[in-house]
Image (cartoon, rainbow, N blue to C red; front, side, top):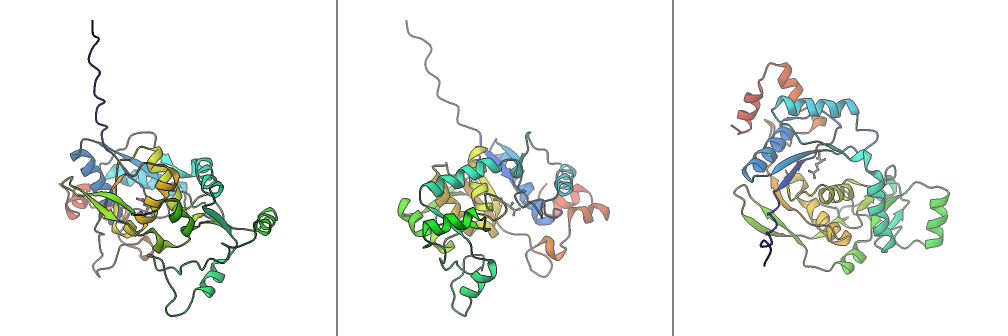
Length: 295
Ligand code: GLU
């Protein structure tokens, strides 16, 4: 007698996420990203999760998290529970950071921002894709005993990826899967070296955006990342961190940014139209959806 034929495991349904940082109200650019995530999740037969990226203890405010959830609900977007709050997972990020340190791929950096700016100023000084001066490597060669003594003092420090060692541990070619709105898969080549010795953990918390986002995309089983083109260059670094930490790599879709009337990227800092302002001015969710090209 033969038993029932083994069943093929069902292909896992796609899991997407919308991951705002609660340091301001949502504006039209966020609304576009949230609606596109929801739309693609629906079209792919998957789900979209909400993640609150609140690692910044000063700028992240609980009332802004509540406002984000309320704005999204107003737009008609509901998310499965539990919503992940990054501030509640610092131990997991610390452990990921410590794995990179133990592997000899990260080192403590005691340089102040001003010192880095001064060391890396000047016309042709190399810059990272965000336009910040590339770290000149001052603390990379610190004597380990001296570094340990300064940490014990304790002297404030960040942790930086040793890019040369990281690339030796995970040699190229580097890249990641991408997908378009029609679900077509492609491959993007990546050049993580252009980030130099990137900060993987800040002074105040045991992570940076880059480390927390790759950790969480894996922890939440995210298969497809949909986010703005302003983060496209960061994906080069994320793909490298995924390899170093042995994490699965999602497929990525970097969408065009919603620009204001002057053709500038919408940013909270410039007081771009927030959903709260639009609501207060009497706009209906359908108006916002239509303005952004969603039915
Ligand atoms: N928290 C980031 C932001 O609000 C988005 C991160 C991501 O989608 O990877 O810009």
